[in-house]
Amino acid sequence: MSKIAILSEFWHFLKHRKKWWLAPILIMLLLLSLLIVFTEGTAMAPFVYALF
View 1 (cartoon, rainbow, N blue to C red):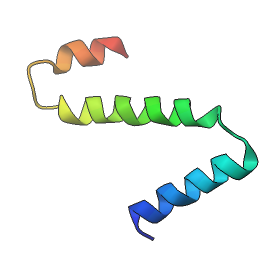
View 2: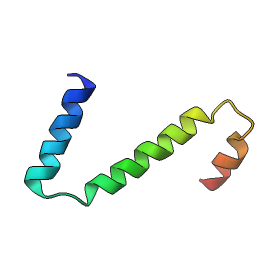
View 3: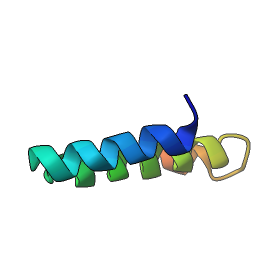
């Protein structure tokens, strides 16, 4: 299953089941995971890990 298919299936789930409260939670989890991945090898890593 491709990534686009997963996103479209998730969008249809939110749309039909009216679970709009899930979207901000998943977006924040995605942004935090991207922050950790992209700052893992930099000098900013101690500051990012201090947030958690």
